[in-house]
Length: 361
Ligand SMILES: Nc1ncnc2c1ncn2[C@@H]1O[C@H](COP(=O)(O)OP(=O)(O)O)[C@@H](O)[C@H]1O
Ligand SMILES: [Mg+2]
Image: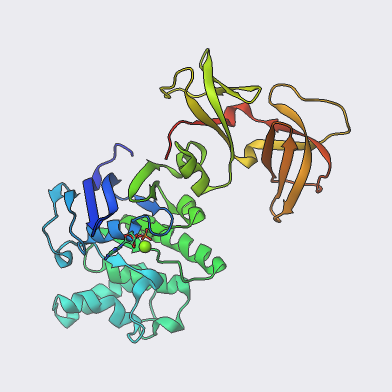
């Protein structure tokens, strides 16, 4: 992750339930003021990690630090890490005012002070005039703002959100997630967000930590996670990709030479400690390949192949093709289509977008 100051540090944390290791020796730094997403399939340990940070679980091993102080033994209510569960966890029977003021009431602040602080929050989140409404009388975006105001009113600078958008329909999800990002940037709060939805993770985050089976596979910016995954698991989980297994056969200048079937790919990728004979996988995203009609002449050379369209899928903003090119089948996305292609085509790979995967997971 970046060199920015970290506000939360998770160091070699393990958590078992019975014999099951839900979290297996995880280390993670969360930079202050960042929006960091834990992304992974259901059951991989995301909620468990959030509950460990919030203090609802104790780690079996390892340390959790907030602003440099070890907090393993500090109870949840003293940690200042409010956990927002699904549906923003507003109290449905309370008005906006009552929801926002809830935390301050628990702290037994004088009424006048509570009123002043709630008014500040209402103004900050554009909720003036809505204080007497109930959550069901508000849009998803407005409810989101109330949830934020309620979490932040007690002076928190860390917000933990566990799949807060999962009960919304698709269109609403996008609307509310944009609002969520805007609110986080405006308040400068450090947000840790859990989702199993890769689009959500890619569009919201400064950093994504991809989880699988209790371990973190990779941490990086959305761009790196998507275009420079380290393993097949990460590449596959965050999007559609072409994978071709091969073997390192040598080096050519800056390039690693990889043989797949009878074809040789030269991958410009420094930083990989591979040697001849190592098994590797070539990855290419479908949008990094172009497809053109072919009138019959053989144009195959280098990274251009003749192929035959086996299947196509019209998705509105693009057409996805499955193209059979002899030894390889490629998935190709045409994102500015002028027609639906059929039959014989040429496909052209952008060599600079070929990526090498060297890790198992
Ligand atoms: N309190 C618990 N007792 C026993 N097993 C649990 C408990 N909480 C979670 N688990 C198990 O730990 C694993 C990770 O769960 P969880 O963190 O909820 O996953 P996620 O949030 O990624 O879907 C799952 O296999 C789940 O069944
Ligand atoms: Mg969960």
